[in-house]
Length: 66
Image (cartoon, rainbow, N blue to C red; front, top):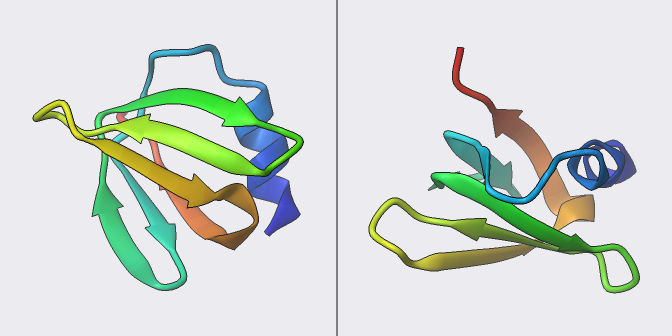
């Protein structure tokens, strides 16, 4: 969904995120890192330090902490 690409493009690096859903699969994440707008790749850090990379056009949910 292109709408999530636009949303992620407005977030600063290291922004707190709980979870994303990509193609129906939940991914627990900790921080939004960066969006490469030309490739549509969104980078997220996991709490244990791992890296999650996904196509922002395939993200259907972004869960932010309250």
